[in-house]
Image 1 (cartoon, helix red, strand yellow):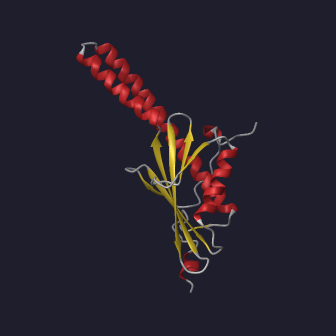
Image 2 (cartoon, one colour):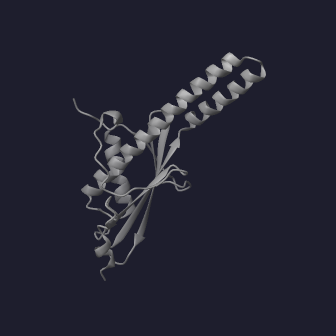
Image 3 (cartoon, helix red, strand yellow):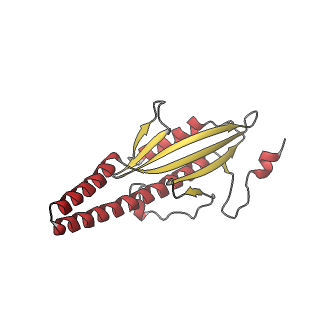
Length: 188
């Protein structure tokens, strides 16, 4: 049986080789890559899109007015907003910084607001059983949404690592806190 990226809970994920900067309050993580081949962010984004589209992910591309470059959806509850920034260091030397923001879909936000409003109306109308049931269903749905967001974040991390290896990007920080590209960056 073959595994696909859409079956995230079946994938045996590799341990992170790249130190991930996680911001739990913003629900984001960041990765940084070094290249001396002049690779621009469009190359990275195109390779990420090619890999994800082959596995049937829905992708929205920024038209220039958003704070993200790509929006990747998995199911109806979760999405990741991907933003890539390129730092030029002279010649063909580049640092590509990638930020992935885990977000709830519009449907997920509407569902959570709906659960809250329905529970409040049930309490006001004196139906505590209905309110308890609504709160329980809302909590269950919120748990599913959080799980799917976490899984999508893991999948996107793996996709970024696969693409980085394919186009020969070097991670700036490894998990053992040693800089892979430090000596390269500091060379004249």
